[in-house]
Image 1 (cartoon, rainbow, N blue to C red):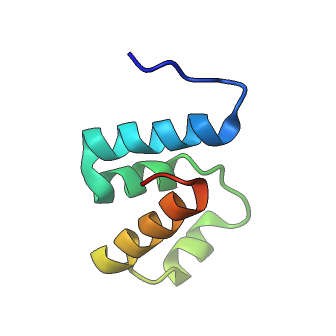
Image 2 (image 1 turned 60 degrees about the vertical axis):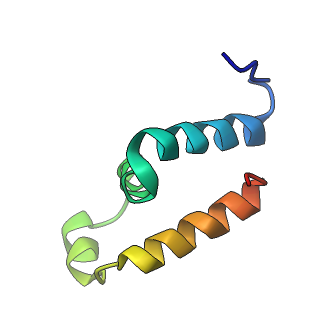
Length: 72
């Protein structure tokens, strides 16, 4: 088991994202992270207006997020 400095938020996030990606794959990890967002506003209205996101867009968002937190 890897030692994680739980006081370092970026380290916790990076290892968590890696674990999700390893367990669920990039699309599943992105879907899981999206489900964990706390809602606000009018969900039904916002959800109906939200465009479908392609797998390529999800992969791009995941790459950007991983680069932002410093995960290779």
